[in-house]
Image (cartoon, rainbow, N blue to C red; front, side, top):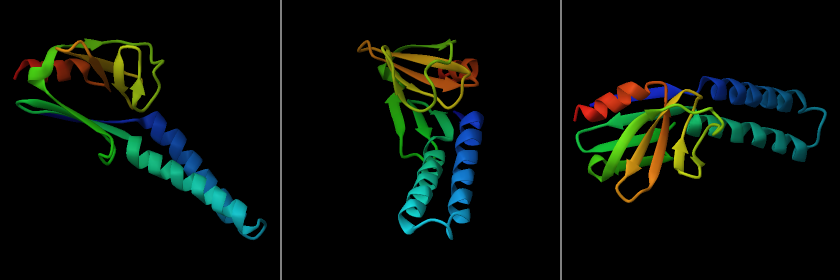
Length: 145
C-alpha cells in the first residue's frame, strides 16, 4: 500500500494570506462601511477559506486493486481500478496547467503544486494525470502490486 499527501504550499500561502487580509479589512471597515459591503468582504474571505479546505492538499492512495486521489477534505475525488489501466508513467510538464482539477486536451489533471506527475492511460484510450512530488515512488508502488 502507498499513501502520500502533498501540500500545495504556494496555493496555501497566496490564498491563505489573501483570505486573512480580506477578513482583516472587513473587521477594520466595520465602523466605516454599511452592512452590504461588509457582507461582501466577509463572503470573499469565506470563499477563499473554503477553497483552502477543498484544494490545499492532494492525497494519493494505492491499494491492491485501486488508486484513489482526493483533494483536501475529500469533496473532490477520483477512484479507479488498476485493472482498468493500460499504462502508467512518470512525466514532466512545464507547469502551465495551474492548480486544482483541470480538463486538458488529453484528460483530467489533478494538481496542487508544480512538480512531477504521473499519467494514467486507460484501456478505453482515456487519460488521467495526477501531480505529485513523488512520481517515481507512485509508479513503483503500482508496479509492486
